[in-house]
Length: 292
Ligand code: GUN
Image (cartoon, rainbow, N blue to C red; front, side, top):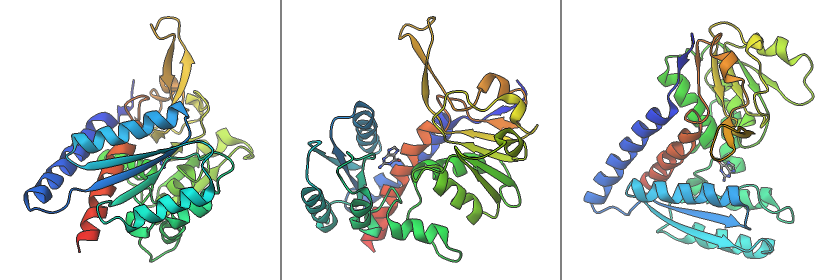
């Protein structure tokens, strides 16, 4: 192993401790508890697990949460009514609609309804639009990409002037990660399923952010020696040596990449823990903004 391991679990724990301390100080000053409302539509097991981890984190950090679990066949109008009531509720500081929504619902219209000051996911068109434009400041930045940048900064990786290659262009990770890298003055290449000669482009990356949902897709010999590798993927891979019968792997072949990269996030324990830490930070900030 030549790469420095980026310990997302430890870095996320530091962020969470800072958020907990700030939340405790607020509570001691008699200010309202930063409170996150989560909206879960339908019964996808992965979405339910993510939402319950977010709620657990709120409790652990001395923040409030409330969950609205809605049936998969809820109408667009009913969902919109709920968002409007959460926008109006002064005891709610952040609103998170877990994605993906069932296909009959219009995600764009739902996200557009979330008040900018409560948009702790950073997915509303105003926050994303501000992220995309020079000289504008979004109130909130999407949590997983923000976690990627936080890990790079904590690891001493120079972003300005670096060539950042982002694999994946999803609204949740790839696209905002590319915008964030651009805002930090990196030169950015975004690759996706139709990109030609991917290995040659990856080889140019000083910073490689991978979010494509394809187990161990990026091979070690694609990576530029010394590059910073941020692996957002979480995939389960059959493994007979494990009691569960599987193990988690990223989108990067870790065993190969760790011999070439300068620093690299493991899976699990890399980017994963950062998403919730950033969400907690955003929720606290939402409460601070709404105090003013
Ligand atoms: N689904 C997968 N990741 C996320 C996320 O960060 N926020 C929301 N709202 N839904 C998601």
